[in-house]
Length: 309
Length: 294
Image 1 (spheres, rainbow over the protein chains, first blue to last red):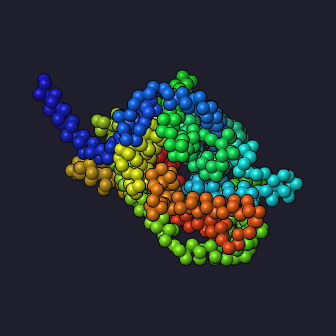
Image 2: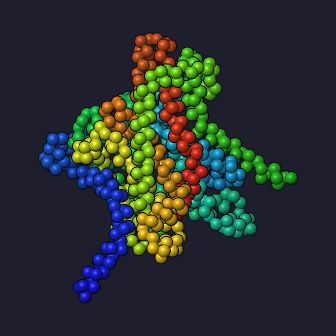
């Protein structure tokens, strides 16, 4: 009995060896760049010294968190991160679906192709390049926007010191950059819906809007849910480049544009305060993780089939 | 006749709206291109415009007068993009292939192992300390290449694509006596052009556009990638502009800062745009197949 067991294990091992060896570089990669940093979160509970290393540094309990939460920064960056990401998720999803529905009505293939490519182009450039566009719009000397405001007899705005309009600006720019890509994903799902449903609906006399409401939207619902769960899992992670470059890291805008990621980066790179930065990072990782588990749990309660895991 | 008009009006409105949106997406690029070949004084006096008014190559001439920085940055970016994209494609596709094979004994655990990295990550500080101090990659090009090579999202898209390739093909090859590597390189890769193009484009894009790794790990200006060079140019120009504003004079005619900035942007964006336009055909297909069924 025992020997056949060993033989079986040996045979299994031999059979799976080539595939395992193929997976090996990938396994190693995730170990080095994803899992090792996960264990590194213990730094948040230590008084990290470069010369003593992660393991050698002294444990100090929750002291780093004390500093973080008593500084008042924690509240500002949490509020900003959640506020912007919620706005981005809601506006981004609605706009992407809307655009996909409209694109679906374009029947000429070449025209749809040209449109799709145009919408995708912003997705492929860096935030640094985008920041050069926004600087051309907003700068006080020869920005494009202030003369337009003046021509409507409105007061010019000092964009890089006045935070009032930044929530709107960031939402628009974020949509401009991302909507093309997301609409492709939704359009693909829409194109995958069987024509028969629509033909049946047409025979029953349903108009376009009713077809969209009763056929298209229910069919893309699972995809919307999956993408939203994933987005909520990242709701504690801000798009660093967006908030760092577009604002020209102007200190005056920080109350309305400082998010967890920019805070962690600044604390680490400028102030050099590893303790505080890692406390903020730990807080981000844990809350983000809890949120994705929670969202998935709620989705599973409501509608088991659409849960992600 | 009446019916024709009734159905065509909404369609025309639709086309107009969608075309306007497309123009919104492309317009900034046109303005940048136009500004880069405009006379500096015209930009300062009249602002940016869609068509260049006083045509001038000054900005490009200036850049290519001392091209060392730019060429070196191009070199760095091309090296990290090429090696990162090739290495990334290989590792990603190999691991994705094993995840697509139903009889692979580690499939379940490995799936979770990859997927979990999408749910939880250690954050910036441990990552920085590991790469900089433990792996000791700070100040090397490896710090720009390795961290971006593989991500769970790409692996899952590829896996979804591979799952759809009929298993009979693999069975047939196995009966012929082909090993796993042979099956992968001779059968799977040739059948998977769209998804390789898609993930390849994602990788090329993330390397070409990367500045974050350089911001964290590179101090030596000889190793700066293109995006970071652009960032420096923009930042310097901003400082020059602010200085001249403080001084109470808006004339900096000697240094064509605006057109110079825009010309640098053009030189940074152009190669990526060309790559995108040449493989976007596959791209839409790859995304479509990889994401919907996933």
